Image 1 (tube, each protein chain N blue to C red):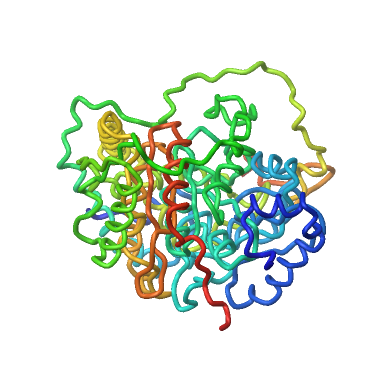
Image 2: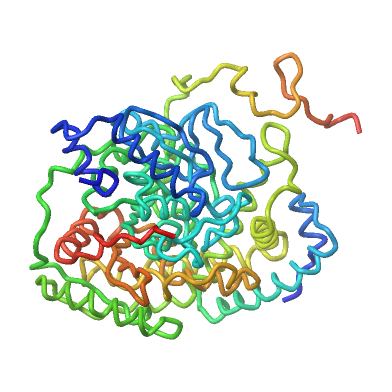
Length: 94
Length: 452
């Protein structure tokens, strides 16, 4: 299985060097070849498992809990801040 | 009495008897860390406390105002403003954090070598890997640098390093312990658990950390009272133990197999009935896991954009990037059905294998790892070979069932762990069987020679 490494890296927003692209292309192909063995398994009448608990729609009251933290702490790890907000790139003003 | 030799249960008793003070306890461990950590690279951060019982915490578990890096350059300065639920629960049981332990970056790895902060060494032989991803947490307990430690297990990251380092490692059922405050790797698989010097210690800690916190909707049970006062089983009469033939095939080191077969004989001597079982889809476990885990990784790690926390995505290490790439591919348009959906269906068959087997037996036993600890660097250039080393731990993770690694012997001076798997949410029986085995053997009392 060949994999379009450039396209996948773009989808993953992952900056890769050319050397990395070449390396991953080889390694991922080898891993995907190994994964091909799943095609031996007949899963026509099998439901997928995404969660083993069997739970669905675990609900709770829509209330403010006691786990809130002060704004200053909440943004304390952001590399760029201004006036108590996190600075980010503009979305609409390209 | 050597303070750092004691188990958690023994330490609590000694404190009650005033054999030593909490200050002396902490000093004993800090002195040992001072002497040994540089050689083993177990801790990324050490906290000098004088109160509480010192436990080590894997550095992917958030600790309030204590740097938590996930072993990644991208989080090298990250300081969580809150505690993970498991940490809060430990603190309220008089446990203190003696340090944060090294790990494969974002818990991705089987050898501890993927950390951005250098690899941890195996206390039994510093030329060998300690296993991973909870490398430092396993080595910390093996080298008596903490009374116990916390780790996380997604495909074997507690059981495998516990086996390779000769300590007790327990992965509870998925949904037993809250994941709140764990940096998510693969959300349908991640489970926090313990590294301890005895099975009784694992049971005690599980009593503290289990149960709903209202923050992880997969944990529905109310907190269970500590079961530490339970009378330990001394024999295994009436217990049926399954031995899956698929866990003894190609790839299993014959010397490891011999040790495991002897352990099974011991279980039989203790009164258990040994039954051969089959888990026919075992061979597909690694393939299923690498699709599901990588897909969840690619989604979970999308949050690292360098805006709210952390640095640029360029700072992810090689294995993390590889898994993000694989997962992004498996979820991408045109490939989703062939890879992610297909893997999720085979996951169902693996889960059903266990359900069928558990109709006949109470627990299943086998090896944790096909080999003992390998040489540092040996598998670093071959990711697939590294992935295959988790072949016996991955299926239980996919099924969400509890798994224990308990020391059961040595091959050429390196420890071997016996894996005990149980029915979903029947964690107690797994611990019962482990404890009965432990009490009948002396493997867990062996200590590595750290006079290097």
